[in-house]
Amino acid sequence: MKADLSLLPRHDRLFWPVVTALQSLDGSADNDQLVERVSDILGLADNLTAIPHKNGPQTEISYRIAWVKTWLKWGQIVDNPKRAVWVLTERGRKATEQEIEALRVELRSNSSMRRKNGVSIDRAQDLNIDRDSDSDVDAPAEAIDEFADDDWQNELLKILKDMQPDAFERLSRLLLLNLGFSQVEVVGRSGDGGIDLIGIVKVNNVLSFKVLVQCKRYKETVGPGDIRNFRGAMQGRTDKGMFITSGRFTSEARKESSRDGVPEIDLVDGESLTLLLKNLKMGVETELVEQVTVQSNFFTRI
Image (tube, rainbow, N blue to C red; front, side):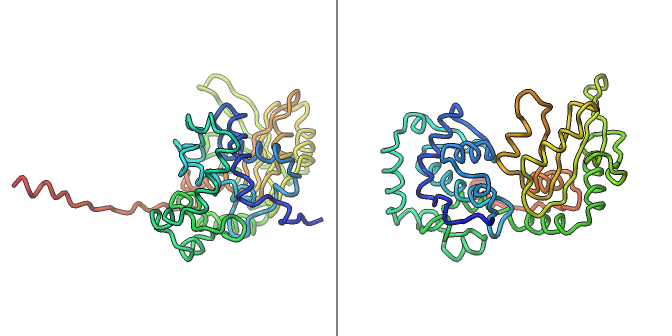
């Protein structure tokens, strides 16, 4: 049954859960950790957290939380020392629910903030930011930075999801080779119990271990059942597995992948896959734009 988008909390109901989640995670988290902890705090069902955002590579709940993180950064509750990492400030560590609510009201009513950031509604729409689901005020500049990469990722994800399954396996094999794996073989066509690739990883040219890989060219989500089935196919063959998909993993699938007492499975979802391909320059070309700055003090010294 299709999940009801209206059951997801709007952005203005996520301020305190985001702060609470960071507080419970010792004050810092990456994007995935934060979304998972907020979902747990709110008791959101797996089918709700898996709802995709209509224009981007992430889920709808991830987009709404991203807006809240940006507002909290503007309010000096959180900091963002590096991409995808969020840390509570001293003020955030001591914040109470009443203080966060007061900040939310202040941000909502502070019309001068829009002019300060200089972001128009049209500009937010150009960047595929869904104002209906996230906010009834203009996006801060930092929010635009967080969503700015969507266009190329959307294009690449569409290509990945439209690939034939065997082509996706070959791409995954090439990816592993570029990541330093050796002796990578495609075995999926032989019906090898759900295992699509086998590769060897060496550590410092001394230790080596076998990694079994499943590749799924999915357009939607991978659930915990898929992870359990893959682990069953791994049993007795290796303790290390990797699951690569063009889709997304549900929060329950992520929990299952790292459950205590069983072999851990590393997950690579569609968004992570696009970033890997970009970093390895596999079908993605990055152009550096020259920036010219005139140093006026040079001329005054002449």
